[in-house]
Structure formats: C-alpha cells, structure tokens
Image (cartoon, one colour):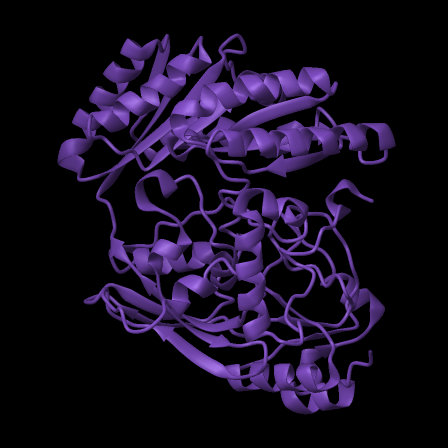
Length: 464
C-alpha cells in the first residue's frame, strides 16, 4: 500500500499535509491510550476536497481514518491500519445561527463548549454536554452520538441533529435530513449516520436543533447511607413529575478516593452521593428544589445541600469533577466502561460489581449518570502487570454479560470503536451484526473508511 502524497498535496495544498514522523505521532492516538502511526495526515478545507481524497483512496485502496479532536474513549479515531488520517480541523466555522427557527448550521470541527457559549448569547441552548466538551468537536460528538450528564432530561446528540452533509466512503456527497422539525421523506439516513463512528461517512456540515435557554439553575447534593435509597430517591423524583437536568452518582469507593484527593470533608462512610441539578423558570425552581430535598430525605438521605449562586454551585460540582484525577491515586491505569441499565436495577449492578472486584482481586469504582442508568465502571489496573490485565479482561466480559442480563447496553456514551468490538455481537446478535455489516458493505464496498472499527475483534485496550 502506497499513499500518493503528490496527488494528496495537489488536492489540499502542501501546507495541509503532514508526513514527518514526529507530526504523524500526534495523530496516532486518542483518549483510549491506544496507538498506531498513520502514513500521512491531511487537512481538507471543504467537502469537495474530502470527496477527492476518498475517490483517490478507493482507486489506490488505502485506508482512511476521519479524526476530530481525538477525545474518544474506545479507539474509534485510531489509524489502526496506517493509511491516511483525514483531520477535519480546518472545517471549524459556525455557518449560521437561526434564532427565530432555533436551528444552527456548523462545520464538524467546531468545539462543543464554544458552540454552547455562542448560542447562549442568542438566548438559546444546545444541551448535549460530554465531559470533554471544552475540547471535543461537534463532528466527533455526532460520529459517536455523545451523551453527558444532561441526557436524563434533554437526551443525547442524536436528538439534536436535524440533517447532515456527508462524504460517503466512495467519494460521493449526500445531504440528509432537513432544516425543519418534521421531515419523513425516505429512509432516515441522518439517524443511520449519527453514531456510525466514522465508518459510513465523513461529516462536513451539521444542522442542529436548538431550544430556549433555561432561566435559572439550582444544584443540590444529597448524601445516602444506603445505595438502594439513592436509587429509590431518583425514581421518586421522576415519578413526581420533576425531571432534573442532571442526576449524578458517586459510590463509596469513589467518595473515598475523591476525599483523599480533595480533603473537602466528604462523608466517606456514605454508600452514595447524588449531585442533582434542576433548571427552568426561576419562578418554579425553588419549589422544585424543595420538593427534591423532601423526596431525598424521605428516601433516606441524611444530608442535603442546595447551591443557588454560581460559586455555591461550583463548590458542589467540585467533587464530581475531581473524580478522574483522583483515580490516579489507586492505580496508574484504568478501563473505563460506560455500561447502562434501567435505573431501578442500578443497586443490583453495583452489588454485582462489588462481587466482581472481590473475585478478581481488583479495585473497581463506579460513578456517573444515575438518572439515565449510565454508570461509568472504572476497573483500576497497572497495564504492565500481565496477571492484573488478564484478571481485568475476565472482569470486563463478566460485567458485560451481567449488564445484558439486566436488560442494559454495553455502551451508553463512548461507542464501540476497537475497545468493545469483541463484544458487539453479544448485544446485537448474529443477525443484527450481519445486517450492520451489509450496510457497511453497501456504502463502503472496499472497506476504505475507518476499517477495523466496531466489527473486528481486538484486545488492544488491554495493552496487548
């Protein structure tokens, strides 16, 4: 396989092609910590240039790997077969914000957090809030169907994508969806593309739905001696027709490690802490906050705090934001799974995970989005320890089987990529997997675009 550098340079210009080893290294990894070096990195400046690159790839049969900001957790952007990385950095414009119709048109390299600030200036709101929003791009969010803490009330990225401009793997350009809230013409290609992890097309424009910005926010923290009581409180809150924008959870091991990191006076004897945020009209927020406190205390909370000012709210969020850096105190590495189960079954899942940790002599900490059942299960390990890696591998498979037994899913946010590809068939079944492969083959007959993702078993996430 030879990458035709001269022809690629003709398409995008010499200032937008990288071939030096030290430059290629920067585009060979993502947040999954997997690594593979491409042979070339290119920065197209338009859909037409992107299409030309893919036509060239089909002619010469070299693999193409689309890349946003590289914040993904499952290796979906890794150039696992070398080839060409198509980095979309130059397509970084907010093309339109239509405040009257509450829509926006953006290019894929717009940073999510920057976009949220821009639309907020117009009195509008773009709710999807992945943890990486200050760095991740909207194109990457769409490719992975990113979620975030606000999903319990507002949904995930796919709920805000109205349409796309997509360069297909063969180099043709299509436009899917509409600029309207309704549109049912033909197959829903927009939904097919959202969450396709760069295997079915490269996005060059995205039409997004916006909503009115909430007037105010209240942030609350509830401490529960018993995990089951915290789960019951969440169900009670929603049953009472209060849907908080955020319902975050920390288990006892997480509370302990964060307290050791922050020394903030967290109750390490508690089995669970809930971080709850409500937003909406100011006239109703205090009543909602009061109701939430009452329901939490009735469910068994023995402490409750409410933050009204930005400073008070930030103080309550401090513990949740400290989790990732705090985990480094336990082991140098981790496997961060984002399994999701019906929220009423979270206590059963957590108890299973506690047993899993004991059986395999591992430290496992759990936190995440209790409101939608999406629990980040962090298996702590030293990847240099071969025995610990093997125990972690067995624990992951047992975890996945239990999650499916509980009616859950292997990924609520991160996607499949390389990391979860060995387990995809467990959830979708043989016939479901075959259907997905037929779609891939129909759109990408030569397997040019992001090959080796989703469908091919690979244990690279254990450092092997």
